[in-house]
Image (cartoon, rainbow, N blue to C red):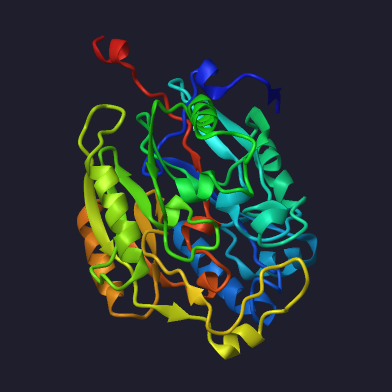
Length: 375
């Protein structure tokens, strides 16, 4: 693996859409007891269900700390590859490499700096040094050259691309004081263009209300395909989320994407209000240097936090009335994929959901350019 000093844009690489073919999915086994209740055992069961659902459609690699290796290897099916790798927590989307591809089908990875969603300003745990090494190790496993970008803090959950030049982000996250406070918005935009291979950036003001990641976009809005997105929505004007979603809807519909297309927005209802119970809170270790997860704190559930894998949509389920409505919307939007709802409250208690705990590697496929198509 080479550590590259150029940029993906200079080298003809770009980030493909998540809906494009994957080579594999990465996940990281949960075990942190100040994030996950009851020694992380309930969360581990849900991670297992998600991994086993994905592996029916594409290869899965589970990264696991040394202390849990033997248990995980005996727990997961033999189809799932288990690799020992040190980590601080279990958020593959945010700590993992962002993979980019060129038109020859060659892939490379980007190693962003990770600081636990805000560092010492408003980060969620300390230290995060092991998590910050995951991306380059993933590149090693994939035998992919790596762009080192340790001067810029970015999490995978804070970006959504269409693979055709368009990127969606939130101001609340990318402009937060705990990330790249030394950079102005225009400088951040240029870095995103240089490293993700995009030409047009749509800035939403907010994500999901109370989202502890400073409102990652992947909990709020996601590409279904180029020119189409799903957006978390509520019709309840008394809900603080109403203003956030309305503003996002207006921004999305009054702009075009990088190809000049008007963007079609599909509204997906947010689940009814959910809160951490006393029992759930009591099962989480309260230690210094980690976010206190207390009884009554809001849980930022969203059906947008789903994962597109080869042939399926792995989506959250909360056992609330909106579950069936969201599943029906996805069945209509993804006619060629199987819709697989999985109950994920245990992941939500830790602050995220299915998209947050998965990271895709694009399939090495040659993409025909216009000149080749004419031949």
